[in-house]
Amino acid sequence: MKNQAPNELKGIRAFLRQLRERIRELIRGLSPLQRQTLKRLWVIVMVMSSAGCVFTTIDKGGNGTKAHATFYTLLMAISIFAILITLGRYLAQETDEFIRMIVVKALLWGVAVSTAVDAILSTVQVWCGDVGLMPGLQMWSNFYFFLMGAMFSVVIQLRRNR
Image (cartoon, rainbow, N blue to C red; front, side, top):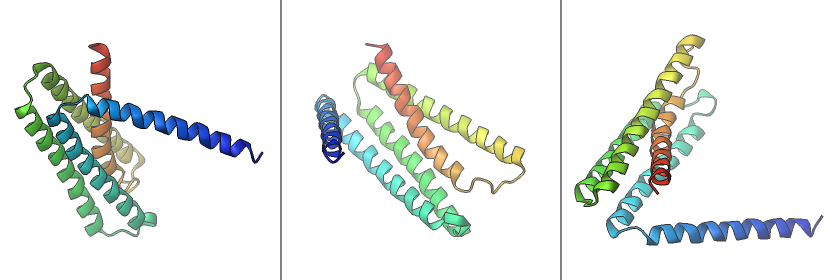
């Protein structure tokens, strides 16, 4: 049994090495403008993920105050605006029409998925009769489902247009 754990770790390490190399290859293939935009988006996502961890820690068991929830909601709204502004600046500088089309479609899908999830969660809360049933979940879902919808849209579009 002791020899099995190092073999599993070797497999995980090899997978992580391959993943890191694939990501590096993908980033090398990007233009300088795309790399700059990707770095800005990465910073926004990291700030929001950190804020989400802090909010979840503070709000455990409903101990968070309305000020915490308001602050977190504002951070989420600001982050989505920051993403839209960053991508708007990118679109203004991008010269390739095909890439512009993919980015615009991804943004639209991100907004659509975020809106749909928000509507579903609102309906569930009303149906359950407790508006405080899922504190923080809608704030979290708006940002992260926006990102997931946009990312999946890009992946699907790129695979379809190969």
